[in-house]
Amino acid sequence: MHQTVIQVVDILPTAIPSIHTPPLLTTSPLLSQSLSLPLLPPSLSSPLLPPSQPQLLSPPTAPSSSASLLSSGTLKQEHTAPIFSPIKKKCDTDGATLCDSKKTSYFNCVGGLWQEMTCVSGTTCRVVGNSAVCVDPDAPIEMPEAHKEAVISCEKNNATMCDESNKSSFYMCTNNKWAKMKCDGANVCSVRNGKAYCVDQATASAPVQPCDITDESRCVPDNNKMFQVCTDNLWINSTCDKNNVCGIKHGRALCHDPAQPIIDVPDQPCDDADASQCVPEDNSLYQICSNGLWANLTCDGTNICRMKDDKAICVDSEEPDNSYSAHKPTPYKAHISLGVSTLTAYSWGLGLLFSTIIFTFGAYF
Image (tube, rainbow, N blue to C red):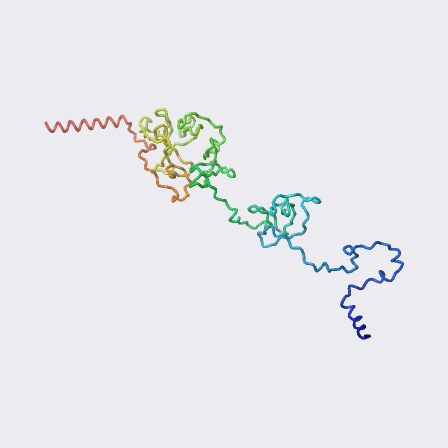
């Protein structure tokens, strides 16, 4: 027994050194009398006394995984204090995230309350898709496939609308899907009576001029190359092609060669008031049926004419042709002046007919 006790005493100093308490706490009655302190609960006991469990060896709290990091670093959760201390602000959607104003941390909605998370040093908070993430500020961010520009369906083909985020772009309904297109050069998209048009900045800024008679046309007084067509109760500007100028014939505006009198420009009748067609000889031109006659229109800038659903439309010249049909046949060429009026041609025809009759009967007799 004596040996056993000695062995236990020899082991105690090395096996559990933390139970050695300072002598002043156990051998001084004066100290114990003068310090008549109440006993503290174990959780708040003096650090000189060993805790019931070694807290330094407890596993650290893992950072939240609610936000992804798009860089080589990792998120660092320095604290989980609420955004607005000491009262936590409520949030509606768990998992929702947003960046703070300084871009050094982000807020995560957890259990209906916003919690602040700090980005690791050297990163900044950005919104990618619909999520706040900590990223390298110098690294490019590739948008996830799910957040790339989505295909949006539409109902009425050839309907148009301006792009609110870019005034030089617009959308056209093609195959029941909105296709993004760009106005040429410095032109911008402008809405007239619910329809999108690519016009120059001056036209877009100018006051809108209403009109009453659909398809009525007129020349622009201060610019002989421009004319206007009444479309959806508004005057829409157009430009004559090449070197042609605007002139009035039979009460409507026509583009013609200034070297030839406008009376010699042949009339080109059409039947369908809604018809339109591209001009094969010049893919920047198209024609619309206006007041029973074909009227020339020019595509904006470098855009070209293509047929889509039996309608002539102007598209980007770099757009592939496989999504459009071939040109419709154009029986008349309003943009080309033959230099001979209808009356003159009729007179020539009658003269040729009489000459043939006289020659035939003269040879018979």
